[in-house]
Length: 79
Image 1 (tube, one colour):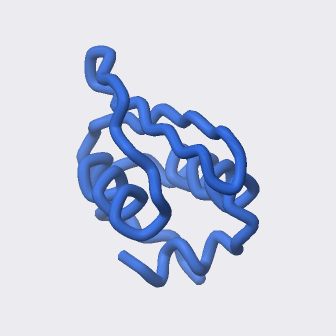
Image 2 (image 1 turned 180 degrees about the vertical axis):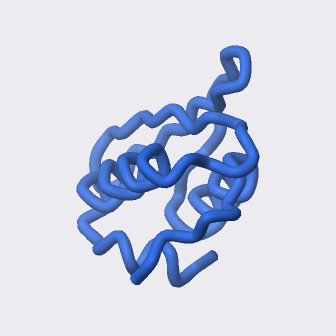
């Protein structure tokens, strides 16, 4: 599946919160810190940029997929 080129950081924060159990714990400048505790503790920083760069989006999706035990494509299907 091809990565979206127009996904903003704010949209990704909403998607991860709504479908994958992440919650916003802090914001440092233009970066939002998200955290989840299921199935294990995981924190990730999401830049609040519009749009996210493709490499940045790919790295975030890879980290979330590893932490949640799902495929990157499964995360993108929810957007």
